[in-house]
Length: 245
Image (cartoon, rainbow, N blue to C red; front, side):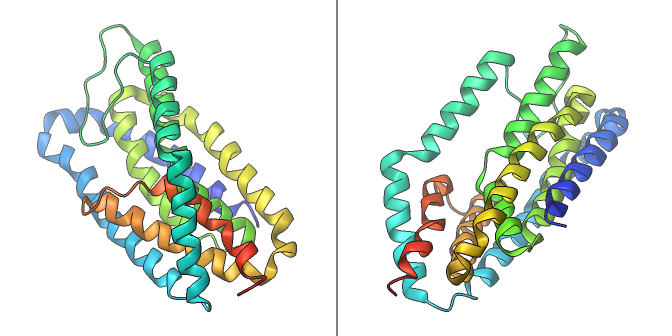
């Protein structure tokens, strides 16, 4: 099933949101438990790093991998994709919420009522789960090769994210499953439509994408501050380079 990865992702967000909603009182009574999501994130980050490195090692044409990463990153930096995504996120937050949440701790609900909390939960979860290299790479991988490993890994990450935001803002977090499924599903279906035309470069596309995911894992661990989004153009360069190299 081509959309299996996105379907599993949506289910884990729903489960995380429900669990966070019911554990909210427990988190408040026992502050030590509030550090558990961050600990889980670190463990997931290590797995993301491993998956990225192991996937990159599958490259059959290292020169394609090298040129794609260098040229793609230069293109992305000139366009400033990372900055564009950051500004988009801030614009959406400014439009719908006054104070964006932080995934590093459990926040108190606002005194203004549940409507604002629902909006915060929806927007915050949507931005966290959609705007990122793992969402794009996972969806591409599912569409190009039918491998859902990246989206399954992202699902665990999003489970923890939904748990944290739901414990802060309530079940509005669950509404994020709609844009997440539409966003990732569209990328997956689009990639599947062109996969037969780029079959000769799929292996290298996957390798480049895996290396980008490894960089994301390093960022998640706090070891680096790489602007991973600026590397995204590198994913498409093997299509051209494999014709000549």
